[in-house]
Length: 379
Image (cartoon, rainbow, N blue to C red; front, top):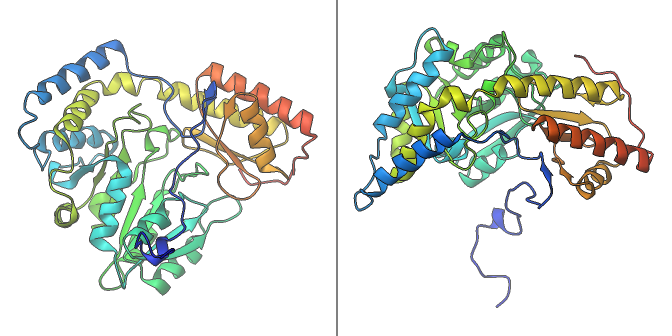
């Protein structure tokens, strides 16, 4: 019989797996990676640490990854005057697995998760994969949140999990602390109260004066702040994400996590990388400056550009977005076709990468006679 195999869940039938295009081009600016790799000293430390862990591969890893959580707590404590305790930290294979574990523990049938579009396209997939209903609000034209409307939506749907990326992907928009406070209070106003997850995957790139939601943890027991080593830490290949939350949240995640979910090798590599944090984060200021120059350059050419606190820039709007994207690919530059219609997202690379991007974009727009919509957008 055709059509009956494999016996996949009906809501998954015919769907394509998530993933950004992986094309072999000279300049890849589509997955928001840190373009500056680790030093030889860092590589040597990671290699030695992994070699040490390899000698114990006949044993299971520490399923509580205590040493790693301790190091992560020390790192996070730099971003809040209150400090972060080891019992408040949990880690997994990338922030993707952290998010999935949160939905496994706190979502599920009869529960819902809520966010505000445009936002990270994996969020509804986490909900789908855990049989959690998905509720989607909308952002304003400048990609900020209307707090009155957002609060009303939370109170109406009473979600178990509210997902708030800050900076937001793909727009780069950061949330002010008052927005987090208001939504935490709204999610705590019903029973069982909801969790508010502030996804700070790009938090290290935020502009000066923009605080981390970590500062609000003591005030809101239902607040969770997630981070990753994939972006600013230049560890995209490491696959290590983590969160800070009330210890009871971490205890709940233990119920759904797979046994020994973090390998000994991952734990060893992540600990070594954390020892080199000042070096790995040493180019963040350079990337911030390059981001701001890119924003100015794009605006000088009449394009609409979202203010960004991340290591990427959303720009547009194009009558033929895909045509511009393809023209850039043909010129050897890969950006991301993501976000609202007409917009493209470029990751911030090295100065050489960005020069190639600018040259390619000028050429593509000139050849195509692309008309740019010069609508004003609030800064």
